[in-house]
Image (cartoon, rainbow, N blue to C red; front, top):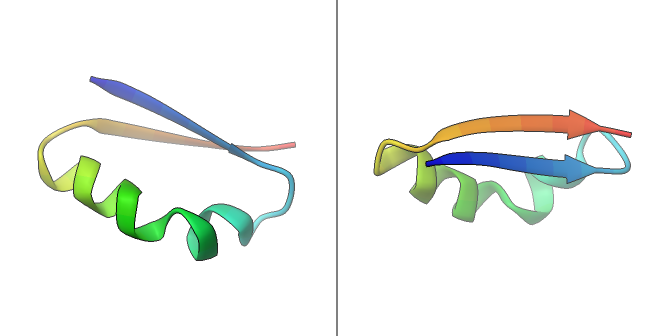
Length: 36
């Protein structure tokens, strides 16, 4: 699956979603991160 994570500030995704994104990446999903 392809996952798009969008945050307003560069560190938002690292701080708030790190655990979830790591779990998804570990199961083989492709993670794309976008900063507004």
